[in-house]
Image (cartoon, rainbow, N blue to C red; front, side, top):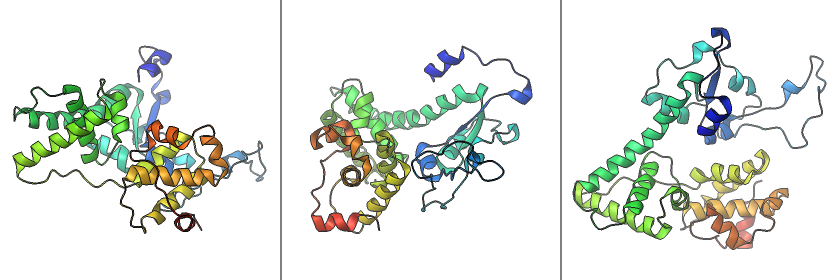
Length: 294
C-alpha cells in the first residue's frame, strides 16, 4: 500500500464522478481457482485474432468451481452502484468468500487494507490477552509468543500460514521458538478452558494454490497439481499438509515443462525456500503413478 501511494501521489486525483477509480479486491486463491479466459476478447467480430495469442493454453476455471471458460468481463467491469458504501466486517468476509470479491473506491482503499490487517491483528491480540491474563507470559520470548499468536489466529480464521511464513515477519524469532511458543499457548488455553483449543483442520489444498503461484506455474500445471493433490487424499499419508503439497508440486513440475522453475534447486534448497515443513515424501514409483492426473 505504501508503494502504491508513493507512485500515485499522496492523494487521489480530483476527477468527475463518472471517472472515479474503483478497485476489485479478490482473494488470490479464489481468483486463481475461478478466473477463466478463452481469449475471445482477442478476436474481432469475424472471429479472427486481433493479435497472435500466447503459446500457453487458455485459462479455464477450476472444475471444482464451475469450469467457466470466460469471465474476464465480470472481473474488469466496475460500476459505482456495485461498490460497497460502507466498510464493515462482512466486507472482509466477502473478499474471501465471493467469487468476484468486493469493489471499493480509491478513497476507501487504505481504510480497507487497514481493516483487513486488523481482522487478523485483533484475533491475534485476543489470543495474546488470554494468556497474558493468566500471567503466564513473564520470562518468555515475547517475539516468539506474538508470532505464535498470529500463527494460531490465521489457522482459526481458516487462512493458515506455515511457521516458515510467520517466521519471515517475526522480529527475530526462529521456527523452533515459534513452534514451542505455539505449543505452550495451546497448552495454557487448554488448561484455562478445560477443553482442547479449536485450531481447525489444515489440508494440503490450503497451501497448494499459494505455493504454485509463488513458483509462477502455469494454470495447466497448477490444475494437474491440484488433481494429483486430490488423488493423494486416497492415500494414508501421515505427514504434514505442507509436506504433501510440496511433494505433489515437486513431482508434477519434474514431469512437465515446469521443471525449469526448479532448475538449479536441489531438494534441500527447495525445502529451505519455505515450501516444506517436513521434507519431501518418498513416494514409490507405483504411488507416484497413481498420483498423476488421468
